[in-house]
Image 1 (tube, chains in turn green, yellow):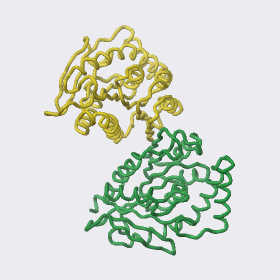
Image 2 (cartoon, chains in turn green, purple):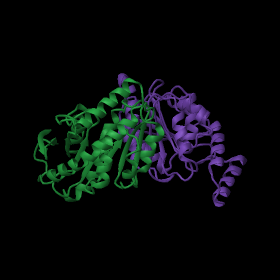
Image 3 (cartoon, one colour):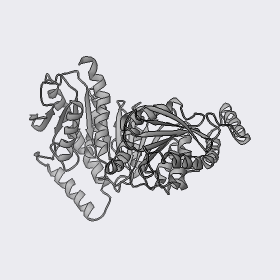
Image 4 (cartoon, helix red, strand yellow):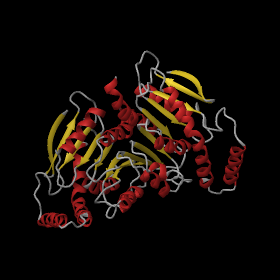
Length: 240
Length: 240
């Protein structure tokens, strides 16, 4: 796997690609979770599986205020408020929902500019299939991104509240795989199901697993690889 | 794939096995749907995938009143009532639930006797891993079977109402994969979710797909194969 760092409009990113000589291949954008960064193990591990399993490219960028990027005063206030709520044993949902919505407003244009740039690379190309994968904050950013960007052909989402996302989800028609934890201590079951229900996609699959918020089974990472192989691989084949 | 017909206590069955020379291997029992039989394409197709994909054995038997087996007067009355309800546009749930519960009472002892017999075969053995797969009526029969028979280590269920099954499901602790159709015109969404919720299994996965009752995506058949490979294959390995 080849790893290349890049920056688009000051936003740092990384592109992982198959080792050698592969022709044009689909691209999967991976949005990291809150408090993580573009090369966190959860991201690079997913990238490894997608590159090795499908021969696709995978790109990740740091979200605003994450990784090497500076935090604004607003970021600092919201993060402090989140820590305060956690320490006080209060529900974190209301804070996470509103702060992730704020971050999504900043992140969606950054993802679109990143995609513009990546599609100028000959090994990706300006008409190839594109997927998006992101859970938690990666879903908060990904749902408005996929709703607004017709270049994205399939998406894996999950582990988020519907409050700020259902409207955008109702505009998404591409295939979706959605992960939900059946015993999530933060996201009420009905809230997770409501977000899955909101997608307008003709093909959408809910994978709900027993367990708490952070106990998503590892086999769901493999399921996401097969999902992208099915949707992006099939679309890529005629041009291969 | 080798196909062998058998009968246990007058109940006709079929055993599919890997072609040649394989040692002892796990067994998956497949329960067919209502109106089907042990060699219906949905059953033999599943068997083919499990035998080819895992090298396991697969057994199916005709349910009471199905395939080559005679119908009782009770069977005839219930089937006539089901057709009448369908023709009248009435919900079929109440009839299917009660008739399947009746069939399960007859079928569970038949499955247990079949399993007794199959485990005397050297290529299966009396201590090897066993799985159960059945949707629709196959779930109505399989849930009480798996609840009562400690020899079954993992199960794939789905597409059924909880009414007659939730009590037995609450006694099931082995890993479960559960298929549900998000837009099922017969089984209300909340009813399907309630049955999934009832399983006491620490590892259970709900696969809910957009679409109507009969539109279960084909990739769920492959998912079931991987589920059995994960659970039965791992358990079989130390003895291999």
